[in-house]
Length: 366
Image (cartoon, rainbow, N blue to C red):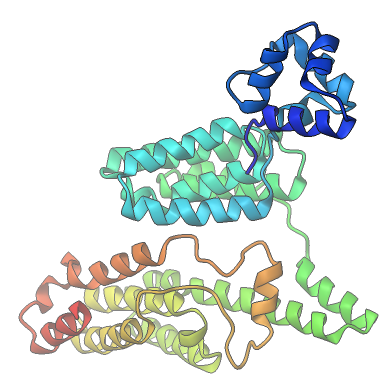
């Protein structure tokens, strides 16, 4: 990550030219001590001297200052991971202020702006109150709107547009979300499937398999991600709800999703238990929560994306894809939310005296 380092750059370029501080001072019409202070970082050149210095060294003013208004994608990803962890461990206001400083400093680094918006969405629950959570979501929305309007990166602008929909839905504004969705045009074929065909035609089957597994994995994640919606939509039809639960359960078992993406399984089981609870089916609730606790205990509190014996080329795909192998929130925050979803959920109040439920809570607390 770049910062202003003009003194070091002046010193380096002066030495490359083979001139002394005094010779540079004479050229600029300043004193030798002034040049010495610049190079040691005690002071900076007058702003009017910057073009003269840049011209003398045959570099741009930006190169002279040593400040780059952009961050690389890798730097942004590292920053996201660090801030995500610190939001859990450090005072919220302190980390949020740092986020805003990066937003201001790299105002036209659109990838950074997008990731800061995602950081706000994924960690809004840490804000401390419903009002502050709403402000974080509104701030994320502001960032996504500016990216969509100003970024020349078509793919990034389109992603920002879709994230506006996420913000509107989270803010309970479905009309605004629908207005955007109705105007989004999608390609009829995902680019991953085109990559598969292109690499296969080129004879690079290894790369073709990476994209094929990545494409299949993303579709699997999207399909399983729809499970909670199916459960909710059929909550008033117990037989259909049970049918869809068993269907998604078989699908996850078939691809060993518990090892592949345990958070996806935990979210599915949690959603199913809530619907079964609303139906008064305590036995089904307990069976599902048994699965929930089993997965939690197997996984521990470290969550990241990775392959399994079926998706044995997925790790390579994740390394080269924008999604990477990290989840959008810290493992600590995910673990705490998943644990509290069982331990402190008023939806399970009717189970508090059930012996089986008490044992499950004790197992999870350990």
